[in-house]
Image (cartoon, rainbow, N blue to C red; front, side):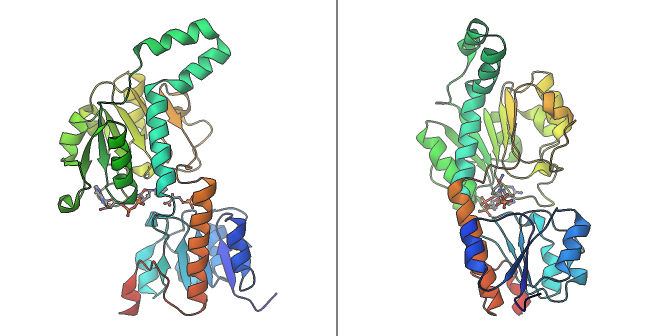
Length: 318
Ligand SMILES: NC(=O)C1=CN([C@@H]2O[C@H](COP(=O)(O)OP(=O)(O)OC[C@H]3O[C@@H](n4cnc5c(N)ncnc54)[C@H](O)[C@@H]3O)[C@@H](O)[C@H]2O)C=CC1
Ligand SMILES: O=C(O)C(=O)COP(=O)(O)O
């Protein structure tokens, strides 16, 4: 075994970031992301680059750990308070995948509104004449109202691009004093009742867990779309499935799921008007490199004993 510090990668990272880290560290790719596997490997690691849910007690037996870096943005995958209590620095890479997520959200909205996926499927299975009439009652997005919940990096870029496409934008935010230009502040109830398209762009917190439950879905306009690019547990997936099957909503796109990977026999798999993707809204060739390089650079700073650029728990220095 080499003297180099071991960096645990919960999942693969971009080859350029591997090349940046390799002269300074031994990279250990987890064979799977089961809690016991991650805990066993964390016991030897000096750093962890995180792309999977870390178990809440992972730091209890991680005596060599000098820092944890999120590959991307969402910190719900790291027990940050437990890290802070042990003075372990935690960093993330804000902005690294913003454009990727925004473009995914726009593509999901357009795909659902124009029924592209449904027509593609029908045209292959049943042919031209069966698929073509579906277009007759599809809707353009220009002139519709888009409700965005969470106006951080993703939500505010989406607001700007949605406005450029002719959408009116409502926003739910804890900071109504710093709304992006042209966005009208709304309460959650008001937004759900007025938006034709609802997009979730907020983090998973105790306040947002279960926020889009059966009651919230019932408030949405008939035919409205729900796009979840945030985190699975924000939406009650069963209530959403029921609303789609009953034809109350026009459609939904779920990139993120309460339990990942989504089980092969999950009832949502045969739900109508639903786009399902495997947590990839934030991944493109460009953003993948951004996330990996941003994580690798900060991990190197930690190994050098420096403060990482995007430290999220500055209390460790207090
Ligand atoms: N599907 C995917 O691949 C990806 C998903 N995400 C998710 O999207 C989330 C947002 O990402 P960014 O915009 O980059 O983060 P950000 O930190 O820039 O923005 C989050 C915004 O949500 C707001 N917020 C917090 N609690 C809220 C609440 N209860 N109601 C409304 N707004 C609230 C915050 O004030 C902040 O402005 C991440 O936390 C992550 O969970 C992020 C990147 C990729
Ligand atoms: O940035 C985030 O929060 C994401 O969900 C995307 O990051 P990942 O692909 O999980 O490394």
